[in-house]
Structures are given as C-alpha cells and as structure tokens.
Image 1 (cartoon, rainbow, N blue to C red):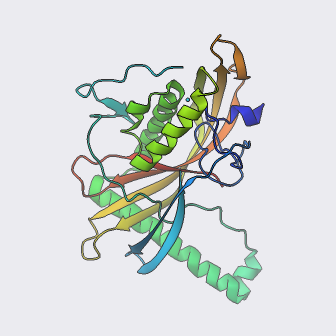
Image 2: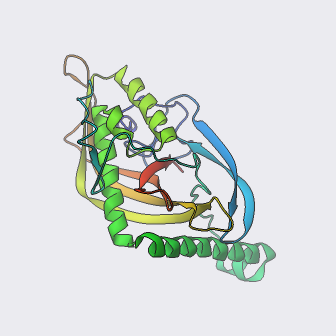
Length: 286
C-alpha cells in the first residue's frame, strides 16, 4: 500500500525508488519505495566553483482527470508568496552542481589518527565553507533569511504538488525549470494513462524542513554576481493520496490514511536576471 501511495500520482520509472509524492526521477532508496520504469534524463557539465577554486565536472540526474483551465497570462500564477506571469523566460544552467549525498559515517578515532580521516576532515571543511560562502552571497544580494526562505520553499512545494495532482501542466511551467517541467509533464501523462483522477492532500504543518546544501554556479570568474544559486531542502511531511478510474472508483491509495513522506528538492535562483525568483530544478532520491 505504501509503495502505491508513494506514487507521486504517477506511473513512473521502474527500477526507481520513490521518495514521496513527486520525487520519482532518481535512482536510489527512499523512505517509501516502489518499482516503476524508464531511464531518467542525465545532464553533465563542466563548471568552475570559484569559492574554493575547484575545476571539475559532476553528473546529475534530472529529473497527477483532465486539467482545469489554466490562468490567463494577465492573471499570472502564485508560487511561494509571489505572483509571476506565465510566459516570462528565465534561463537555467540545466544541471545540479554537486547533488546532495548522505555523508558516510566515519569513526572519531579514524578522523583524528588516519590519513583518510584527515582527508575527510579537510573535505568536510571545504564543503561547509562552500555552504557558508553561498549563503553569505545570498544575504548580500537578495537579503536571504533562512526561516523566510524555508516558508517560501514550502509554499512552492505545496503548490507544485497540487498542480501535479490536478494535471495542470501549463501552470507548473513557472515553478519549474525547463528540464524539470519536461520530466514532470511526462510523469503526469503516464499517470493519466492509468488513472482518471487523483486526490492528494498535504497535512500541515510540515513535520520538518531542513536546508541540506547551498551551492553557487558562477558564469564569470571576474564577476561573482553573475551566478546561479542552488539550495537543497529536505521536506518531511504527512500526505494523503487516492486514485480513481473513469467510474470514480478507488483503484489505489486511501485518503483517510496519512503517510509520512520524505522529499529532497533543489531550488534554483539567478542572482543577475531581472525579476529572478526561486524555482524547482531537481528532486533527489538517495
């Protein structure tokens, strides 16, 4: 039952472990797991991390009824407490720099007395410095506040999941990067081929919200303001789900039951484009 509920309202990729309502595009284990099929889209890129002068490449996998009439261009659509027009063009790097991974545990004695432990301590220090550098840049550039951002990100998380449940593909475009929107659109269409409609409900407040990682992708080594920022957040929430066929009969889930779901989403924002705002660029399953 839990594997079905973790659905993300979609029939998604087999051999993919699901992490919750919408996190179905990454390989790995999840809190709630199920098997679905198909390859996920992959992007790789070479980028320069100026904060610590690293020059290397990292791979990244990028990864529910009839939809209601979307709002008009003049109406726009609201995400995370702000309202944006549906057609505004906002570029994206198209990949996630250093996708979050759960740190491998290391014994205290090994960290202190072995070469591998010293190397690990140095690596951890560099990663923390990169987090601090990115957050400092955000504070100076846009007045970043952790609590306010997490509240805004939670509103985006909630709104995106509602739109996926309704199958509102046009409205999703403003909250997602192009690659993410393409992935979600395919997931919705696959789901609709099996289920006529779905019920999805978020039980508020969230159990917990954590910021796991902060990274900056710079485009010009001589101007650190020309950059994109990516913040990785973990949402632990309680959700309800139920899917129906064309006769409005329940075919999956049970909306009377709450299921604990863990999602990890990556939010992205440009520091140099006029009118930039936070969008979801990836969902990660560990």
